[in-house]
Image 1: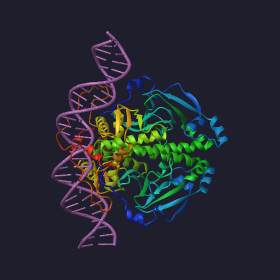
Image 2 (image 1 turned 90 degrees about the horizontal axis):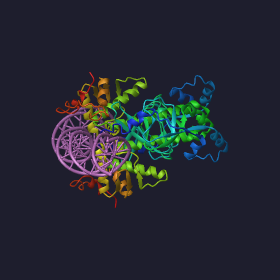
Image 3 (image 1 turned 90 degrees about the vertical axis):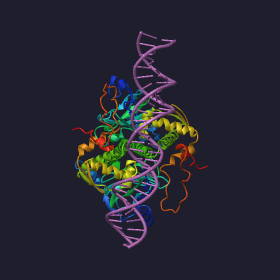
Image 4 (image 1 turned 135 degrees about the vertical axis):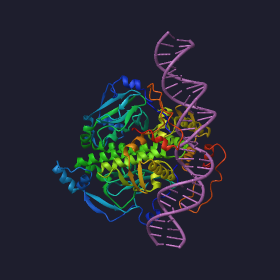
Length: 288
Length: 288
DNA sequence: CGGGACGTTGACTCAAATCAATAACCGTGG
DNA sequence: CCACGGTTATTGATTTGAGTCAACGTCCCG
């Protein structure tokens, strides 16, 4: 699986500018950051004042640029303000494994806290901005504004849960199921962010998507057409609309092939399998 | 992939005893916990005293018992003191996806911090003990003993990095490469813990291992024999000895099939592929 | 000794990787 | 303006790695 995906990111552009996305930085306060994370400090006026005093950087990262270069010294954590990032690891051959997407409110760079160098890189998929919190400020900020410590733990926990979700996706048997699960997760995330859970734009190309699913990019194409023909989706390049979310959900649970349930003396099933073009067959496993 | 793996854990035993592994608890101090995590607080005598005052639970978890039941309310974080745990997620069909192993010094339950209920379960693979830190104590402990906050972030970061490693494993093309990568990571972890990096005992059965690799358990067997025959390993059930770690490393990098490097005008290669029994062929990609 | 869980090996089939061709799109430059 | 190279997406043909089914040996426990 996993065809190329070699340097999906415009290398030329990155090489031309300074390696680490350096752009006219802005300025914000810890209070701004906390507000974005959903904590208004409304009930802690004193902490609110403290947070307003603590300055945090605000950096612009143009599309395609690296926020973090894998292997570089880790100096800060980043919180996505606007835009989307792709978190990836690439081996020396240039092959790239996408590990996560990070959108508004999510932490980037947390996985480096246990070491010196960043184990992953972060690339902006579109023009983006991030809050910058220096590692050397973490302790101070957490002490002076307990809400920050709380939120940091929450976002880190979320990052962990997200990666676990990705493992679930990659563990699925068939490519169609992998895609279905991925889309459902994306849908759930969109809901959490208050956007439409039915329709959204994929921020990445087929190759990056294939890398996340752990399949060849041609297979992603085919999986899309299969799900479309099953009337579960409507796809136009990166524009995806979920037509039947319940059906998609049912389909995504079609993990490993049926088998005798754990201990329960049930023996019906199968007899429905076999014959036509595969994925279509997996469809009649639907509820209604 | 992923054959059954249905309820690898002795359900009966779990069902018989209270759902959440409940065992004669001990008592420890935050200082003990920090000492295990590698922070002696030697340079902070006052913090040392504070930490010695703060009590944390110490719980015994017999082999096969659940420390955390997926879906249960999250009330605490756990730090493995002795033994090993398997972190897993199981869908309603009884299928189980293993997400991580947790050994001495690692956190368990961190992924629940962003929600109410535990998104994963944790099962002891052998008789184990854990330090218990209530979620309600987290803020206090972090404030009173800054070293705890630091170590908590470090271990959480490690958990995230570990899961990323697992994604790398599951992203590999062939089952043999998956196994090779997994073993190398295990080897690295053993080194970090000061144990032999050449030889170790797998704590899990083939089915759980298969779940982590994202393949059928029969395939794990075959991959083991293939690597053995390649003289890279010596395997006896769960006892694994790495014979040629450099060879194994070279093999593990054999990801996707060769292809034209990014832009570079190189055209040699292949012509070596094809003919014999697959994995053996992949071997001559070695350095020397 | 029989039942159960586990590990290994073989045979068969099929889903997906691979190889290949085509089309659409984009920015550039003549 | 259109031609050109480059990147991306889709679809088809072919091959093969691994999932599945099945049989067998081992070990442990009651």
